[in-house]
Length: 631
Image 1 (cartoon, rainbow, N blue to C red):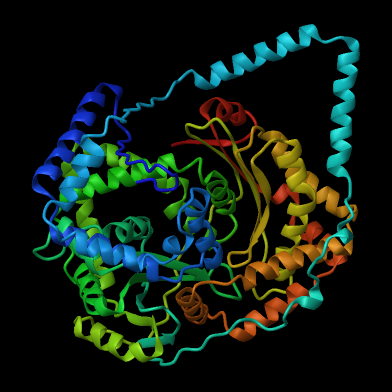
Image 2 (tube, one colour):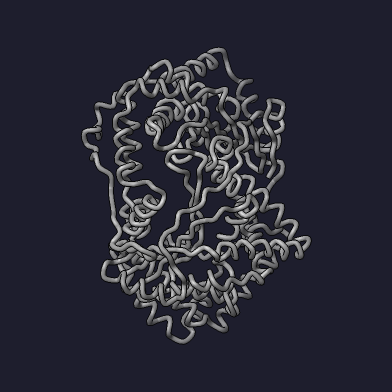
């Protein structure tokens, strides 16, 4: 339901199908709506959706995007189309109205009949890929340019050249920033944000203003895993909360989750040691949230998923992993720069190699092949699930500890709920270092269905405690703001480009996003280092980058999110003292320091390069020393 316009739209969609199924799909939608109109919707399903609306209204978010701006953006529809801004901000009255109306006989059925089945304003839209699209676009553009060139006089040509030169000069012009108000280093607070737990032990308590929502996390210190187990782990964590438990099917569990929780999900966290890049350890985290009045069932749901997973739901597993594979392949061009950076970074540290192999392009390609094999031979999936069960059994031998975040006066009750779930808990354990193989620096190209390119180059740097780590983070901002943005985005035509320093894993990365160029962009990465060596930038540009780094360190989060981050910093040894020292190193960076660092670390002969492009472009790069991999 798209409610952002004055007239709302109700849409049903299907992806990955074929044009010949258009009528079948339309009949499926209409017949389903008729069935709903005839039989209605179970009251428990309606109550579950009302619960989700209440939870979204209560939750104070802001970890990815400032909460205040989120509220403002949520009001723009009402403000633009003449609605009530206050009603859009406070939906309690509307929720109460819905609770009353939803208990009227045929409430949902009447809505479906009146607004959907008897609505003549309906369209079926089918979209399909054109295999000749890219070539036709190129041919049409070439034809258009040839036609334009044929009509140009010498005077027209001179004008074009003059305009291009004027544009280049304008792009390279140094504007007077002093005419604008600005923040300086004098405005930066010297200390870091700190937050201490209220209670330690097997169940750690953090108090926060959560507005009646309880947050619960379980942490397992990962034992030493084989390479195959590390490959399975991301799929295992994605799948576990999507299965049934005990005598309940996955549909039963999804309904229970919707009715009593905001979400439950399982994931892993890895970080290397502060002093060495090759000693990497990790934790598996089971995270959930709910309204406080449902916290007992949140604990029960999480305990059931962990202790009684239904690995026998083979059809569900295949459906879910097929969807996961499709989504990951389709998502490549949306996050191509991140995937390219993962690939380029993989040869420089254990953490980067682990991320690349378990969640990067190799993982996407591997899952695609597996799904194709399982679809042809379901027996292979059954055998694969035995490996997943063995991994679950191995992880079940580790005793987790727990983190609770909520209002101070509610934490004791939340702990009682967690203990009543039957989960065995212990004090936090130190994770075991994982043995990670690192391949030597290389040049690689991955091909997929894309009309644009994603380029990256990476260099090995130092652990977080090294004196050069903080300045390298500032260096990335100087290169991005003063050279790479101009050459890659403004002049090169890419949607974005820049540099960043992954200080946890000790890798400096260049990148471009949705880029029409390839080799020219890789040359621009080297050109930025040459530009820096000339020293043609002011101390003010260094200060701008420092302020950008501090801004990212100090950005506000949600009350619960800041508590979780404080605990995770503590878990991985990122103490307040370490963070203060790192912050001070950031604030004290100077121009000459950056010039020296670039010369020491960003040697183009030591770079690894990675490109995501289409097959035609990939084939051309093979002759230039790139190793070609296909999705």
